[in-house]
Figure 1 (cartoon, helix red, strand yellow):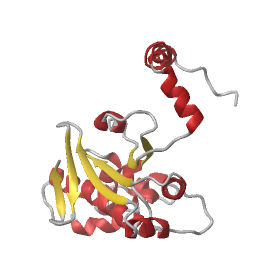
Figure 2 (tube, rainbow, N blue to C red; figure 1 turned 90 degrees about the horizontal axis):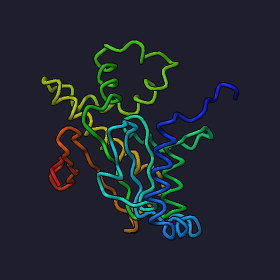
Figure 3 (spheres, rainbow, N blue to C red; figure 1 turned 135 degrees about the horizontal axis):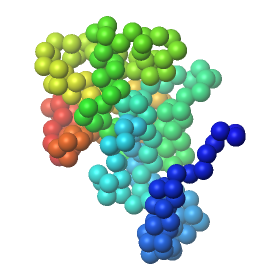
Figure 4 (spheres, rainbow, N blue to C red; figure 1 turned 180 degrees about the vertical axis):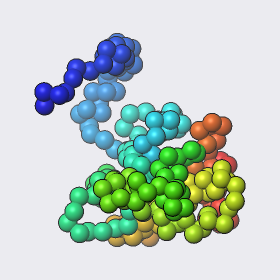
Length: 216
């Protein structure tokens, strides 16, 4: 552990600023959160992309969202094989322990993971095809969805369609989890698919009645 370095000074200063302002002005609320535990209303599954700021988009307070982030906001199919599954573990905890009322998958524009999957599907990313590529093997979750966008000629339109397809693949895979399917069937859990346009500040939601995404 001798390679671990001190925290960069700019982060130290930002922490001290937060402690002296936001925390100091809401001490009782933070102590309440610390004493009572968390009771989030929704689980948000979003991308690791640093430009996707979930709490800012929805104006959320601490304790309101249970957030899980991974490459391309993907959820793999239910696979109880005894191996280690971080995303599946987060879903299990949110649904069975925290009993969230909503499961939200949030995709976004210019997603590097989705673009990587596109490149793989077109034979343009041999480095991602390697068995030792964690990103490539993770993006295999989305790979079958390429057939739905392969016919689109415009590169930007195709990428955005694939980003939205990633949201739907995750929603479909969530329903393979028995505890998710049961709570949805009982009306205790609702599912939502969103796509965020970073540059435009736009937000689209999947409408199952019309089978496409539309602005909210």
